[in-house]
Length: 140
Image 1 (spheres, helix red, strand yellow):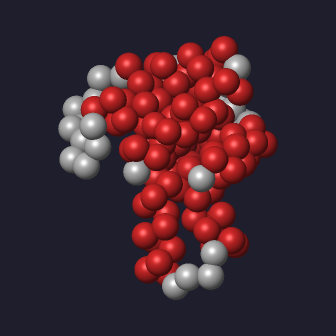
Image 2: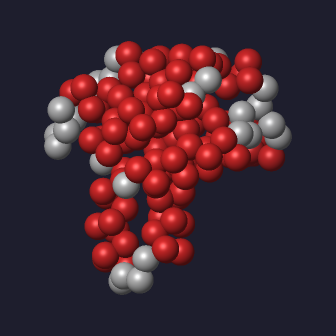
């Protein structure tokens, strides 16, 4: 139990970029998926006038693999070299999951996108996530 409490307390502390780079791309994608979903949900909550079920349906349009793969194409020219490296690491990661409703190429780029969001979040670059999110939203 003590070990788990210590890990929980680490949530309040910043991770170094070196520590974040030690996470696998799939670990970065794991947290990035959740972070991006929160951005999408907050955006929809503040900018649409639909019921909760409608919010969920709208959110799916942003978080499905095809939309995230397209997001990579939209932001690619604005990414730094380091950010693009993170996307490629995520894209090239070996996943045991097989996409149900996406083609494999979209799925790989979506994983890269989620890895980027996770990387930015864990390195406390949420302002950068917001910048990229704004570019993605303008394209929709």
